[in-house]
Length: 352
Image (tube, rainbow, N blue to C red; front, side):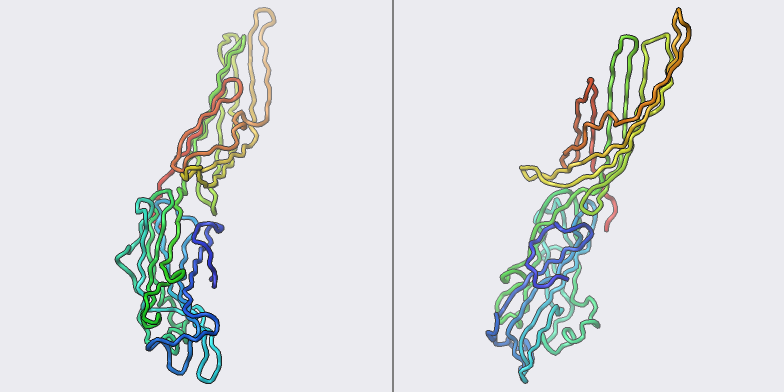
């Protein structure tokens, strides 16, 4: 757990790590004594600082189509001294009995359950903050002070989640205060991305020689790209088929060429703020064997073959940027060849 942190709300840490957002409400600073409200603490103890904050955690990357559990725990830190002058410092103490509401601004991107105005309460409400089992025996409480909201990520985009938790009045001096920065509700942006895609490549080249015509076709069909950490990763293979014709005196035996493709994808935004995916390709070498047999009027039948290994003809296209909703891009390559790449998001049916 991160403590005393004012980190901004956002998805910016390595994948599968948990974002911990902690906000403090400071009601009293330094050694300035604050008169304890009624029943807030045993009369013999003096509280100099009370800091109320929410501990919130969720995965760093939210995938469209998945459901997430968002645990929220209201906590407090107390500083003060007892009647005998001994100082005390209670940290990360659970605060039960707190009503917490959650709200998503754009419900087309994500929803939360229960949603405002409905709320969840963090266990029972103790009589005072000191000298109770909620402070003296935290291990027995387990997750007593924790409430769990269900967040459903619906489609790619950015929206805002707000959590409102009011500090019980007997601990706030009778004033309206909230678990959050400067006594206000906690909120920030959440980003939803597509975590599964399919990528298809179609290469086409047709060329005419004086004595023959040649076609070369390459396809990679629905190669999967899935989220790994904060990046999309995937592997595929382009299968090439060469066809030679137009010369009735020759027959050809041509092996199928293959090239592996390692793919990575990263998420970003274009200048207008729309989401996009940049996919980078790393191609393996392509090998091919061409054998021919030709019959000539004077010299008779002759046979020959040629081996070739090198970069595939699509290697000139190494990076493509698509909208995060998917799309197609066509590239014109050497000698009139063309390459079309299509990226398609795949909805996730399951929840998490």
